[in-house]
Image (cartoon, rainbow, N blue to C red; front, side):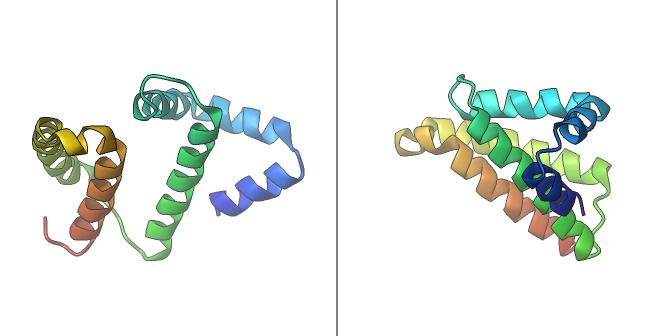
Length: 120
């Protein structure tokens, strides 16, 4: 329900709720700021930051609504091990160098679906 609360407070211009949310999750705020900075070719963009935050809110809620639970240890081991190989492979192909965020996003959703189906 965080996505619904997010939009309710956004449309009612409740700035205090956003400040409290950011202060309660300060580690995640800085982590998402770093992701935004890296995915936007080392430039800051508030628009991309807001899109990433909304995307993560809605993805987490979709997984919760489907009743999916991720056991973090095994998922992260497989996820990051394959991601290192994927990034190394993608950097060697000139036509994919500029499309790194797209490749990583597709990889995230593919791995989430595979893990949810019980492949790993």
